[in-house]
Length: 504
Ligand code: AHR
Image (cartoon, rainbow, N blue to C red; front, side, top):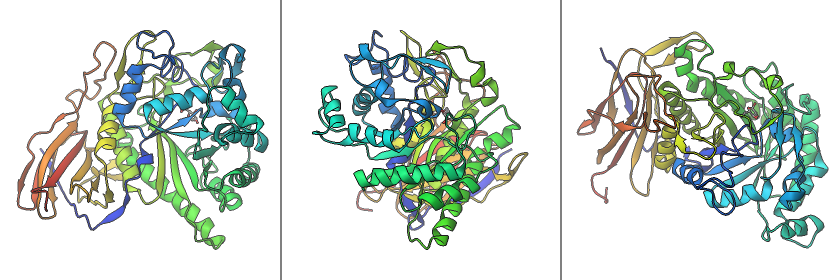
């Protein structure tokens, strides 16, 4: 039996512009994300720089706009100097975050060359774990100053003649977490972040800086950490970070399917915390949110860092994603769009192999995981302004989050083309949903694409790379301003409407 739901799409109900930077990803020196992921000299499809062209093509197809680098936990014990200069002179190091051997054949200049080929904006993270203001300033001078100083001339001697001009910098990573090298209290971190930000803004007031928020919403200091850190840094930073991973094997399936509702609660809590600090400081400034790590991660399958042997490019957390995971990833993207007025940056973690939409085999193929598809379609079709969409629908009881709406949706409207696009998830595990949509005048449906399957545990693999792909939805019809369609149980859909004529 089908449930029913209805919603109204109206270009007058604007939340904010679609921020291209929310379609970010993350390349960390972890497992096989860099080595045999994006970078594999000697691979049959590697280019002259050793970059896998199959992965570059998939990255462009995914629609990634920005990539955070080089960590993650990795950055908190990283010396950026180890990764520049002649490769034969670069040291091998013990990498403590993931107990791996780091050969440093890929570093800052390789990443910038890769980012240019992928057509993405770089977002760099600074080590504020084991290092401080001086090393951060040195890295920024090396990366961004045109030339004529020791560090900028060193970069030029290393073959990067033009400055990289990185605009977006993270002031460390997850420093509230006791697992982090150089873990700090909020007071210690706030002071270090403030002094680093002050120095970086002296170097270039136009840099955008991200203060570390909590590692996840389950941290005992969630909210309090952000308040203390922002009190110390408010006028010097532009963003505060949020991280969230949703584990399909942790709890009931309905809670997992409602992950987007939890992400929205987190976004609104941190926005409120930032605004509270702004009010206390009598500041007109609004801090934006950088959701710079988010994804589905089967965390309960990971035995922890201490269990790892010292090896190079270990197969670390190479989760294989099924149909339900893809629906949840689609709903997390809907959540990011629904909060377009606050979320200015977002990065799915990570890009290749490590909890990633792209998988590779060393010397072998690359393929799209199920979660690749909602990301690629959302990044391709979300344009213009995000619209407020509030479906009238059933509620589903969940063990973790109480009642969650069965239908989770957002929409975008592109004034330039007149196209209106609905992104919608049916979380119901038992029933399809007959969805009624009230449209503005003069629109016609052009496409309904859905991601679902009779077997929700189906996944893609090297042998069956296209087992799960988006397919045309059935039954989209329209009468006047009313459109209707059926959303299968546990499905993610995109529905596009275009003007009847270019004039309308
Ligand atoms: O993305 C994997 C890890 O998750 C990152 O290194 C860390 O920042 C987070 O805890």
